[in-house]
Image (tube, rainbow, N blue to C red):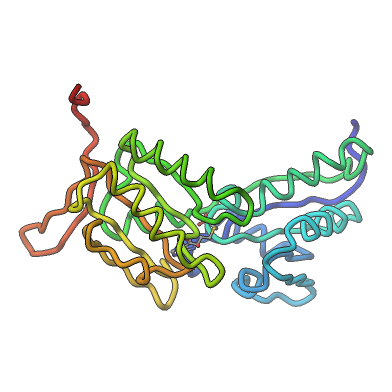
Length: 260
Ligand code: SAH
């Protein structure tokens, strides 16, 4: 279909915390935008600019928010939908594409020029704080069962832990999902030694940033909250103190052939 004369829409990631990890490409797009659309907490992270309209909404209205942003762009706006971290990792980019796909059947939003602009995701930002725990193959899993059945989460955890991936666990726990992290750690524990390093990183890049490395066998799930990401080591992940006494965690780049 030929493009009409609509405006443009960018789905962007703000990075994990403060402005230092927002990419220049995203910052520039935000500065030019006529409309900022997103979950209120993330919209609040965008520097205020005169004349810019802000459309802050609740966390669970992704489809409505996506259609609203597409409509604003179709009407000629320079619209930015904001996510934290990277917009393609458990965030708004897929939600916008789902609506765009549904609308395409009826020829909707033909005039919108869409771009997805990447951001620094929580997993890599957390990893950098402690060293390089994601230095070899890793697997990213959300523990939230709001948008998928819990059975599937368990199946994927079991398969990924069984294949000896390092695991990055997003959405580990919330008020409505209090037991899932404990169950996840139990499943992972079937495949890993209790000494396996686990990185708990909270509010990375923000004012309450806190990071700790604990042994899998000693991890209390109550230490995590919804602003925390967990990085669970593979069998190759190590921790050590350098000559100055600073502790690092890393997964070496060379992994031996598996024992039969
Ligand atoms: N799009 C985001 C992820 C959204 S899912 C990204 O790419 O980072 C929300 C989950 O991400 C949280 O429950 C938490 O596990 C993780 N997360 C997001 N920001 C974080 C931060 N600053 N510090 C630690 N974890 C974070």
